[in-house]
Each structure stands twice: as C-alpha cells, then as structure tokens.
Length: 256
Image (cartoon, rainbow, N blue to C red; front, top):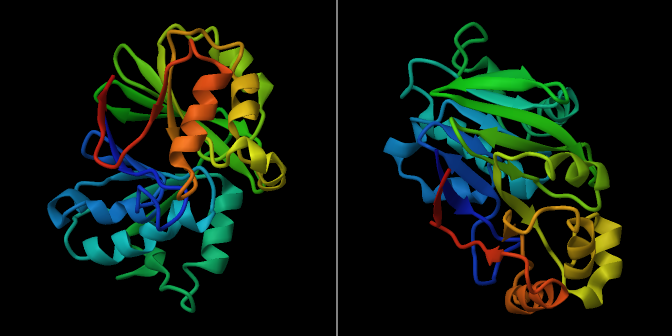
C-alpha cells in the first residue's frame, strides 16, 4: 500500500496549508479536509471510498467539493464510511440544501453520486487487493474513531483527533503488523490546558499515553498548530528521545 499525505495542517497560515486528508493507493481517502484540493481531477475521480474519523470541518469540508467535482464523471457513487452519528450530523448540518446540496439525491436518489455506509465500531471493511480497514473508538470532543489500515503484510493506524485512550495502546502494542501511527499533537506543553479542553494532545500528554508502544513503531505527527510546529516537535523528542517521531509534510509518501 502507498500512503499519500494530502493535508496534515492543524490550521491555516503555518508551514502546512492544507488540513487533514490522507490517500491510500489511488482509491481511498482517510478524512477529507482541505487536503483534497491537492488532487487533480484525474485523481479525484478515482476515489471510491472515503473513511471519516469525525465531523469537524477541518476533516470533512473537502468532501463537499470533491462530490461536486466528480459528479457526472464517474459511473458509480463515492462511498462514505462513518459512524451513524457522524452521518446524521453531516446530513443535518452540511448536505441539507442550505449549507450544501444533498449529493445523496443528485442526480437522483436512485443514482446518486454519494452513498452513505454506516460503520459500526470494530467493523472491518474489505476494500480489495488484500486491504482492510477497521474502526476503533478514541476520545475526542465529538464521537470519533481511529482506523487501522492493513495491507497484505503491514498495517498503520490513523487516529484522527484524540486525547488519552490507554485501551487503544494496550491493544495495539501486541499488533505485530503495525508499523506506524499517524497521530495529532496539536499544542505545545505550555498550552496543555487547551489541549485537554479541546481533547487533543500536547507533547507531554502524547509521550505519556504511548509509553506502552514498542519503539520500532513510527509515530507520524499531524495536526500541528500553525507557527508552533518546530517547538512541538522539539518538545516531543525531548520527552522520549528514543521514540521515532516524524513531522508530516504535504505530499509525503509512505509504503506499507
């Protein structure tokens, strides 16, 4: 599998300009923030599946524009996988004919460009070519899931946004296929109060939380707040010098 970083910013105006979106091979997106705009039309029309971790705008706003762009250019719908709660939120507050058209009814309800696929916790979705995606609960200000993405031999975890979830690391520490974790670390330690309030990580909280994980697991850091990227990464490495922390950049590519 190839993992393409489309967007990894924690806001606008910083080193990275596009928000959370990751592409797996040519046909899957994990979240759909403004990073969707990195793709050309030929790439957009190949997206068959989108897995959403939660409904905050920096993770979903690109979905609206993607559907608008590929309408009439595909012979099958784009399938959006998310929790029932997330789907209900998007139907009510985004695809409601007021903020944005309801693409689940365009061009017709029987032949729509958008197909909702409710995904239960722990459910495993088989995509093809030996790939599976499984959802697991994490703690954030709204209902949020992480996704474990497995290929034929290796796996990675995409956490979405989260704060301390000890049960997740206890479980994943035993996963011999897991090679990397994509995880947010939004604020520096001086803003730990804000990290806790918004249920994100700061370096100290993240280093403490992932202590059970083996050191061979890479941690790919996303969602860094604009203007504080270098400080956050320095503090992370200072808390655990042996850990493999990598700050993600737009257009990075990883193979699993």
